[in-house]
Image (cartoon, rainbow, N blue to C red; front, top):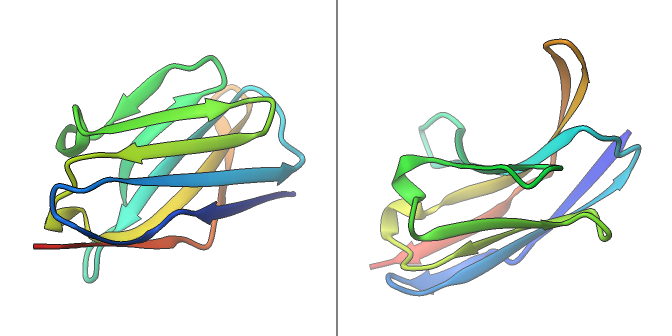
Length: 120
């Protein structure tokens, strides 16, 4: 099993910055990808950014140029640096670890989420 613990959420004014962290523990095997998803009230969970164990990154168009994802493989931790925050970034942010198990198969693990609120 894999456990994911997020930290770093909070309340910030528009234009401000926050840094989210997610520490993974348990049966973490490569290859894998770690990432962040978010869910605003009344909306579906959506991808924010992902990073593979080989450091390939992918971002949602809405956060490109403002958010940066990174990971420390030695610490099994993924980070999300969020700059120039907007009110529409307000959501619960969930950490994800996708463990690839062969072919097109994978297993997803999720953290409990951390609230990010951006005031206008």
